[in-house]
Amino acid sequence: MALYAAYASSLDPERMLEIAPHSPAAGVGWLDGWRLTFGGAEIGWEGALATVVEDPGHQVFVMLYDVTAMDEHLLDRWEGKELDIYSKIRVRVQTLEGEVLAWLYALNDYEGGLPSARYLGIISDAAEKAGAPEDYVRELRNRPCSSIGP
Image (cartoon, rainbow, N blue to C red; front, side, top):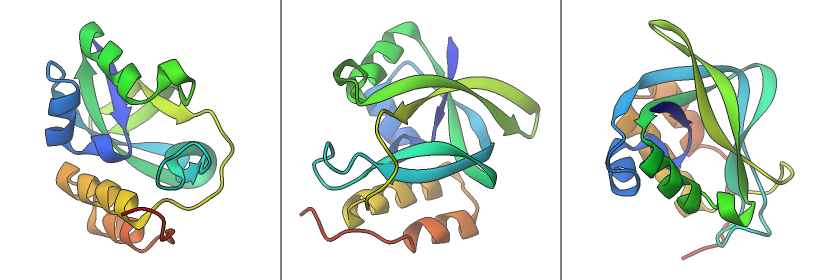
């Protein structure tokens, strides 16, 4: 099994159970020196898509999952890896037990654009369910968003 670091809608363990049913949550942590942002508005159906970029002085809350090979394939399909929307990268995650190596999906597009209010709400709710600190969730909920979508 490999550790997957989820930072957007997959922060929600219940949602992940639907996507990757054999891959339990393995804790939480932070990507130090990274920032949550959005990009690829022209490829998303409701505006820009979540991604992370390196940025000193920032950090991103993540949920770690022990992902089986079978579930990794399911996640690849879910995240659009086969369509070249996202690529896998390896990152170091800071946890209470120390630093761990994990992988995540990074958008294959430039930063820029706004997520839909619905998508941002899904990410905010997922962060809250994952146990992200209140100030982190509040910052997510207060981010600018577009009026695109249902």
